[in-house]
Amino acid sequence: MIENIHKIRQAQSDFFRSEATLDVSFRRKMLERFAEALDKWEERLCDALWTDLHKSYEEAYLTEISIVKAEVKTHLRKVKQWSKRRRVATPLKLFPSQSYVVKEPLGNALIIAPWNYPMQLLLNPLVGAISAGCTAVLKPSPYVPTVSGVIAEMIKETFDEEYVAVVQGNRDVNKALLDERWDMIFFTGSPSLGKTVMAAAARHLTPVVLELGGKSPCIVDKSADIKVAARRIAWGKTLNSGQTCIAPDYILIHKEVKDEFVRAFAEAMRELHGDDLKADRYYVRMVNDKAFKRVASYIDGAKVLYGGDMDASERYIEPTLLDNPSLDSPVMTEEIFGPVFPMITIEGEFVDSVVDFVTSREKPLALYYFGREQDGWEVVRRTSSGGGCINDVIMHIANEHVAFGGVGNSGMGRYHGRDSFEAFSHTRSMIATVTWIDLPFRYMPYKVFSLVKKLL
Image (cartoon, rainbow, N blue to C red; front, side, top):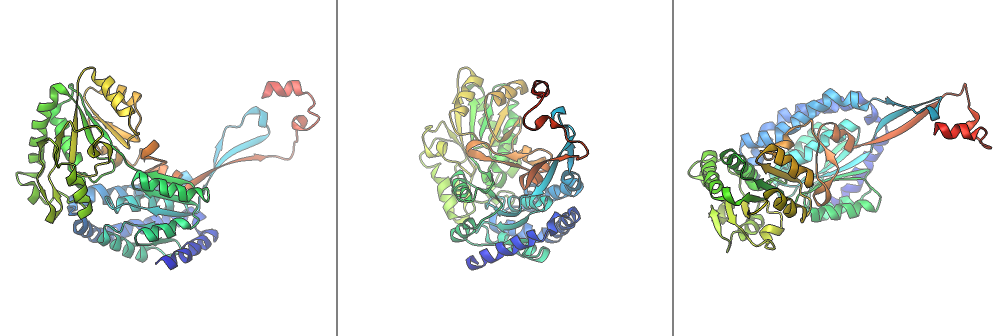
């Protein structure tokens, strides 16, 4: 496949220069074809997600397929409007000109996706690329070979390779892809790999969208509805078995409600997954043995408040609450990406303490606060994160009308809805000036300059 990468990119470059993708009717036709393919391949995609991740049909549909379908529908409705040349205000000093904003596709895009949501995080950006008028090379993760194979088959059946192509492989393939010159790179993955992508893009000054991760705090104040908070947090942490870039990573909890929360969390787990969680078909497994060993290591030697059961043969790890681990331990310095949940007890002035804690660390992809809404907004005002929720977790990603993206170490750039269109577009500012009049004020020797100064 490596020897074909340059050939594919060159074919896509030639196709883009043919101007076929500039026509909005072509883009709408491709989006309609994409929507039909998602319907046709839905069952096979869900089966593949079960094979690779033990992800139930319901979870696969809710967290992967439905999100991509909603994105396609939004772009079908809006792409014509978004693509129109738009007239904007022109100041008097530029009379008799008129000002416009023009949207143009960036060109040949490379989209690299991770394994945890292998369909959503590969195909959702593709919607934006198609809508904006780009071509795209898709690079799925090798850690989910069944899903990646089904996606490759679907894309090959749906689009010509000179327009949208899938390239599979490991790090050697990634390196070969990044050695090529692209007009835009969209990457979802870890901050460490994001730096590699950005360094490669810098060689050609290629714009990037980096959707990374980090340690997203989950703050539980004493004013929180503990039963509701525990249920929502338990759901968010067990969704995809914690292998979610915006999963709540650790808990900052008020001392007065800590014991109550632990009890409520245990009860919520029984409500969600029954008495035998291991047998529950809705509970996802670690993606591979390496991931299992890494996440399991966080539990070894720690003080466990709830959970802790493991089975290496099934890559199964029970959701586990840890009590006040050392702040410099791996579980508090590395992104967990699994169902292990360290809890840090906060005493004293709660809001000030959690703000100090959060702002002393890298900016997270998400921030979650449970308690009085006005206190939640105060925490939001004094911290920074890619996005987040007050009295909920995860759900901000489900709204295609709001942008999703990171900040600082958790990424740069935004997508979903119109922001996906914008991510793959260049905004071109244009001035159109009539020729029937040519005012002399701007020309040397700058006559009546005193009047010109008043207009500026």
